[in-house]
Image (cartoon, one colour):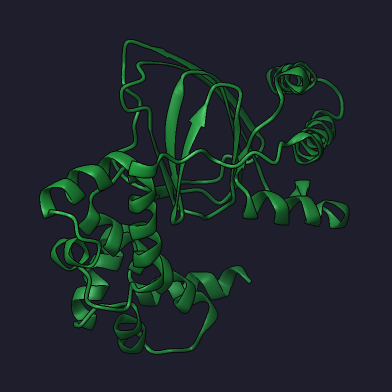
Length: 271
């Protein structure tokens, strides 16, 4: 997993033709991201949530939450990405932040999209120009956009086919039993699926392999314990399903780019 420097208050547009767009590794940012898919389809894995995004939908990615995308078989994608820091979320916007962090996929009725795309166009002009009070205007437009997204979002939930539902059940099982002995073999027995079918179907639906996902979930939970508790590295390793603390430290460093001890020090210094 890779961390990236702040992209605070950034607007980017990207259109891809005849090419699959995917991230090989999970990564995270110190800023929040709002993703709008103009055309195409893509899959988002944010934290422990797998989300399929369709044309005209928005996705909110909270700061410092690991994520990756994959357009899979869709070779024609067009998207807008807006990045911004905590200054957008003043006291009046805290409810918006909580809602968007809880429900990251945002579906909007087609009739509402012109109002939102107009705000995006205004944002693009402010970002590309050098007008007076530019930053203040950008922050106001982002706040207006986020408020309307929460107001206009539909109650429709993500549609999951019956064949995919068992895979989501397995991913939820991993997310709640990450401290236990888990493997492709134990999960295939638990859910009465062949290892080959489970392996192929899991990667197709979630976007990563079973083993990678198990390790990823364990590291996500270790990250939370490092930030929010005073447990020792050995205790955290044990609670997150790692039998060897040295192995845990190696995997954590490979995933997060720093050792558990250094990560804890950085988390404390940011408070």
